[in-house]
Length: 372
Image (cartoon, rainbow, N blue to C red; front, top):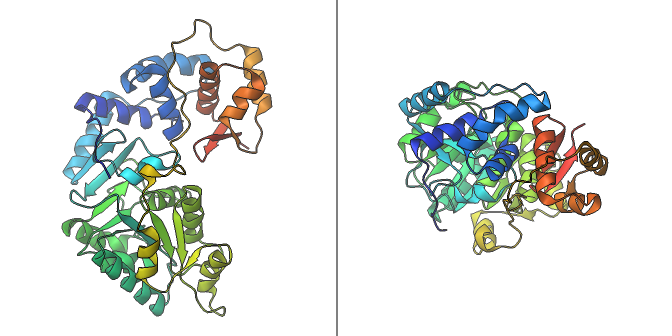
């Protein structure tokens, strides 16, 4: 996959970091602000007045704070990579809400476009861990990069088995908060052997329960396919599998005994259409022709073309019409535009304002809904 793109200057990287670290600004809002203003610097300049008008308090990090985070990250061996840059993981560009900036330690020579995720139970059986190891070794031998979440059990087994061929551990916290702590040594080994650690979270961020599903979307998003080795009926691994399906990636599952609760999730996935596998060859055969860059299924997040700013801001009537058109059920933005008759640029402005107010949420890139 081509590695073209625009390298950020130091000042641009600082501006990008300040913008994405601003309160209430996530990947979708970031992209809309960039589209609206033309650059992160311009977005930051206009943001205080916009927030004041909306009555939405939000703290914007200073230049010094952003520069300090960049310097501290570099001291840990990490670097910030923007989504416009050639070193940004290519498969990640095609997911909904792709992080504008990721922190990466290591991985300079990895094949980021040829990756498979292996996930599963933290309390994995010995047989499950052994199978994960076999998969990782065989996939690595076929030049696939193994991606996982550095959790106990299946994740750990997969990372260890892929140390020599290349593996990526996606963190739920900051680069200096490896979780679980028992895998700090493994994290160092991954980087020392040419693999990588990746996170979108700020330096110093301690992972919370809600950060793991957010992490899981990156595990699946970095990969052409996700393999679930063992998983209970309700588990983070099934969340990763669901996210992979939403991202139009392949989902594989290893069958297990109906008597083992750790096999319930994988067996259910197979019943629902996931590909049953008995070895790496099954995965390799399916992914042989996989390439998101040439698949119509892989679409970028919704983002209208930049237009000349209109003289008048959206009216209160247009705002009310747009809110009335939304519901708790996600709908395509194009449908909102058609049903309201509001121009694209004004819909973009209104959705941006509602997003900053925390009143809407996005899913699958092109679907928007009112936040409960």
